[in-house]
Length: 112
Length: 115
Image 1 (cartoon, helix red, strand yellow):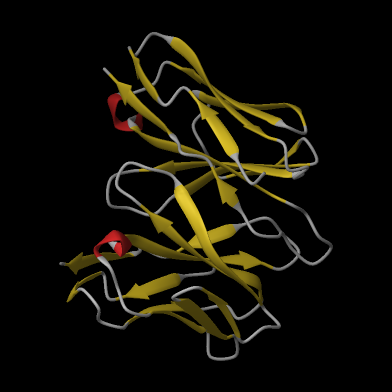
Image 2 (cartoon, each protein chain N blue to C red; image 1 turned 180 degrees about the vertical axis):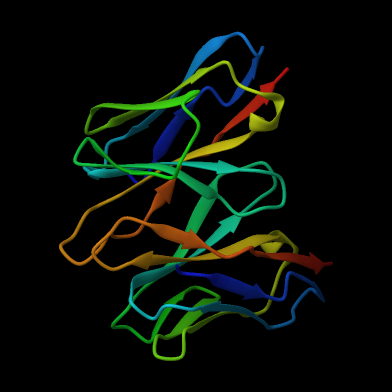
């Protein structure tokens, strides 16, 4: 059974700092990995999708990397802003199936 | 358009009521999902429909009854719920490819309170 772990569980940083969120998974037979953002009481917003054959994806100040063989992904946020405060979730999609397995999330607070 | 629309946004129901949650997408996605999310926890998969057929049921109690009337709509019928069923219910969709499913898009959720 796939297990996804995110470290740290919570992170508080001053505005402007660069930061890294970590995600690890136990079964490397994944189809893709997605990073989501969730604001309190809201739905999930897709930030980046990395296919299993890719090493990284970038969108604006966000960069996600994937090392499938070691079961790890990182989300790098450059020049953090208070508006980045949210919970960040990573999720892996299984091959030949529809199951999407989530980590517990990292709650990020960016202080002005 | 990458929108998944869920209605209602909020729902309060008694333990003897029958209600339904609705989800709609027009991205041509053929996989649709129901997730349940409790506070400060990740979403938990409940059901998956692939090509309008139920493909995954994560041992969900029968008081939750999913329905996929067509490729754009997904319903979740609720009956005789318990207070512990209070949660945020999320709908999602993705496209089906031979080796796996594509990027998943989520709705804003229905906040359900059972009294």
